[in-house]
Length: 200
Image (cartoon, rainbow, N blue to C red; front, side, top):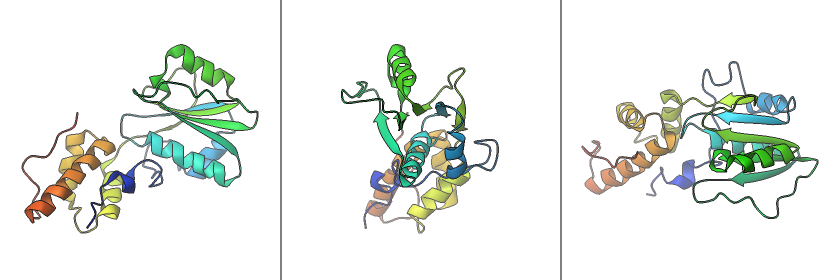
């Protein structure tokens, strides 16, 4: 059986963002956030590593597409810091910028001042930029997703141990569950191994 914790089953854009208590200060949904984005031309989605910022960004972008709106997705990380040469700032286009902190400040400034509308993900909230949503990792959300992926395996005690070890980083926790699944199947035992690969 294929490992249910393979990234193709849980990576950004595969599972829609699941709202947790306290993130937006109210009963938020994708539709309420879409409406909120009409109020300002720039918004930020803030939160720690692995807390769902990219997933929320892509879920929002998908809803924009469903409404027939013109969108452009830009992704930056420590290997990709180059702004696409074909980027044009169309009047009706919304930029969804994932990882804007990876760019030099002047490039960030150039992007957000040229864009008609932009929604960015960021770890540390920028001053004077409206916050659309703060992603906050919660064990209940993590356990719900894990149990959807592997109902027969996701014992709560194991999930709690993995979640606590990851510091609330969903990405790190799912990588460890991938290893757990592989090791458990190899050993033919339901008990968690005494040592799992650690991620910093």
